[in-house]
Amino acid sequence: MYFPHTTLLCCASANPIRNAMKPIDDLDDEEFGHLVQRAAALPDAPQSAVRAAIDLWPAPYSTRLKDVAQAGMRLVSAVLSFDSWATPPVALGMRSMASDTRHLLFSAKGRDIDLRISPAADHFAMTGQILGPDEAGAVELVTHAEDGFETPETLVAPLDPLGEFRLDGLRGGTYQLTLRMGGDEIVLPPIVVGERAK
Image (cartoon, rainbow, N blue to C red):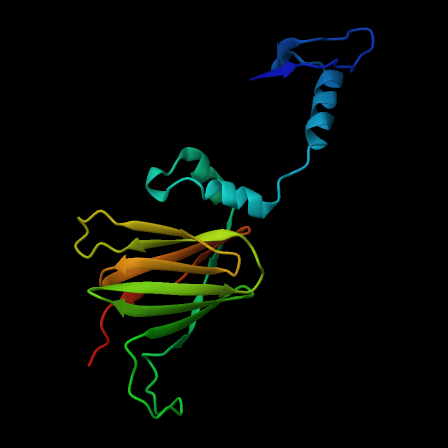
């Protein structure tokens, strides 16, 4: 590995190096110490900016850099705390008929994830909002292949400034939703999208 020295490297006043490239293995202790001090003085980018930059790559074209960057994220599992289809309307004190729109609420590490799945023509739409710390990020929705031979489809949507997102054109099936924000990768349990059982 080579490091360009574009400025005066003043590790040893008797041995100045100007505009030279020198292998890192050939640096003496003083030169290496000076190089480390210069590197340590550089400010780190905010985590939200790093995450936003990583999310610029489309999901199907995952790169080694993106994989390495995501490996540094904390994996957080979300827990389902409410499902409107699991509780009969009478138990909720409602007098109306059951809704075709499914409302799900998940909790994960100081955040609540509010999801709504509603029919839209012959497909479904998923809308959601992340309630908690305001951080930039994105959601990734991946289909589960039923037969094991289908290539999973991936949809990615950025979070708007209010933490909201929308994914349209979903077919019935099982999906895995992952949220990437701040230093966290929040994985929700598999979500079944489809018509309500009559």
